[in-house]
Image (cartoon, rainbow, N blue to C red):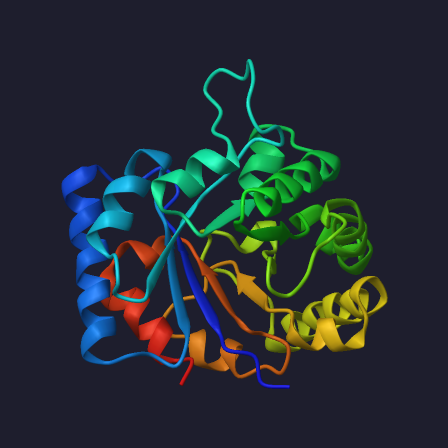
Length: 251
């Protein structure tokens, strides 16, 4: 089954108002001039979601958040609820990114709660999975991905409200990437896990992104793999030219 690719940019903790709006506006203009063969999404810092969403309204460029809390509201100083992101104009939210799992000690159970909160607020949850270098070297990649998938996917997940992103931790921001055979193996495994969890028809529609040093020079090769349905882009999403080149690779 043909799945429309999703090219998602994770800006991480980068961007003030002027630069963020300029970057998003440049991408929106390109979409209007030459609609890509993929869905495009940018996930700016929470401080910019509102401004970016307003700047690109009607362009076809989607906007998302980088994280949300698992609760709808409450005494959670410094956190942001999924409904707050939705209120700002977001349509997606990233949950379970390795930087959250590592830097903030997030468990798969917490990621699962965040994804469920995203669904309840009407957001598409991009659920991230991926192994560390030690886990890769120890031959535990597939076991880690399976455990994270089972622990992070909430009840009620569908291809319409959920996207999976495989990001080998050791490849994020390092310039290193697994071989195409290694990427294909993990994505095939995730598709098989989805078939067991969601059924074959839903699994065939589920988008599985690859993240971890995807850039213009390797995007076409990675996006050509059968079970790679787009990319979750970090550093390369901060430059309109690079992000657009990756989107064009999905044609």
